[in-house]
Length: 156
Image 1 (cartoon, rainbow, N blue to C red):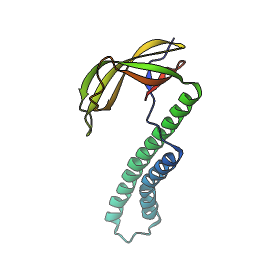
Image 2 (image 1 turned 45 degrees about the horizontal axis):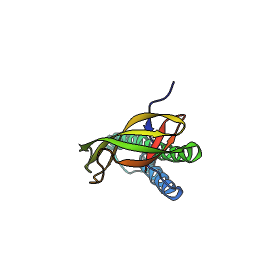
Image 3 (image 1 turned 90 degrees about the vertical axis):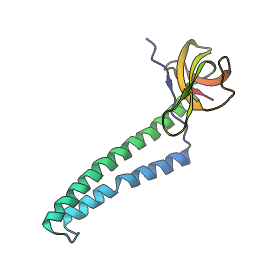
Image 4 (image 1 turned 45 degrees about the vertical axis):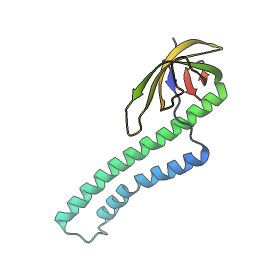
């Protein structure tokens, strides 16, 4: 049974990965620090205000740690995808089948439907979003790298 095709996460280099991880650790820290200062009694507040700061510390901890762990995992997945494609990827061709406008997020782009083919695997169709480029028209050939076993791909 073959797996569904999956586009590789954006490539992040070692320095970028280190900086991203430092930012995600920094995002995780304020909640536990606020919570620890509150629990140890280092803040000069009344009992009624203390419950508010405890609730704020708990909320900040949950949100900050959740976001930090999510970001850390995205960086790990990006690095893992890059290593997998470097180790087992084969050169392939991605033919643009259809082009449509994509309005997701702040940056408009083009939603592409591709047919990816190459040696060592059966051709398959995949979807990707790219920045607006007038050269992206149906029939255009793009270079790609595909891991034949998992059908992980990256369009260049």
